[in-house]
Amino acid sequence: MRKCDFANIAAACVLLGLSFGAAAQAANDPYPTMAPLDQYLIANKDAEIALARSAAPASISGKADVMVLGRDGYTAAVKGSNGFVCIVERAWATPSDQPGFWNPKMRAPHCFNAVAARSFLPTFLMRTKLALAGKSKAEIVQATTSALANKQLPALEPGAMVYMMSKQQYLNDQVKAWHPHVMFFAPVGAEKSWGANLPDSPMIAADDPEEGVTIFMLWVAKWSDGSPAPMEH
Image (cartoon, rainbow, N blue to C red; front, side):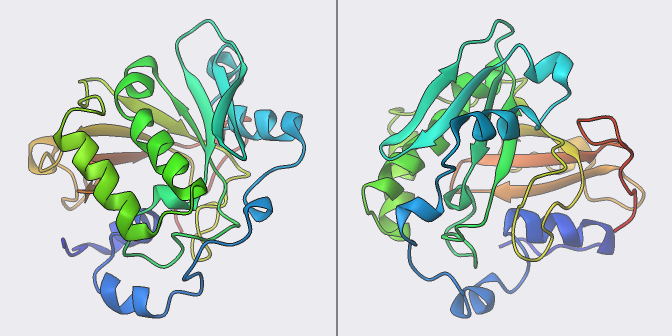
């Protein structure tokens, strides 16, 4: 597991659940099992649609498809026209060895571009189906990694990215809303070729081997509603 080498990427490592000493943290996981399903659901469908759209500026999210979580998985709630898909991810999107994998408070609005919606989002949708079917963390990881290896899930396409600019996001109990940012996806091991995690580089990166990607994060100055965000945490 990669150690986070610089102070300016520590928050990102916590966000992604890829911080040094993860096994020790997992031993103290306050959410060792899945909570009752109702704790993960948002009762008001319109509220979940609005939260999902808050991931990106209205010029993007206002024309995007929107999916909402139900008892059997995510379903289409709004049909858009620009190829983007907005969704509120739940905690099983995080790496399985991290505290918070079953945290029912996590609400992470994402707005994926068309490339990411085709080639990255299906992995999370599969994890969701498995979680709602009562599968364990180990079973979820085994099933999704096997599906990626066997090409039952699509291979990552170049150009995949996602907006995460919601002021209402709750990413975990440590960083909560963290900072508005955009993320880019590349094959595992792409960190060096992007110049990420170097002194004074604005690009933050961490590998997510369970989903077969390197995730690159770039802070932006404003939340999706246009209000300014702090540049230091």
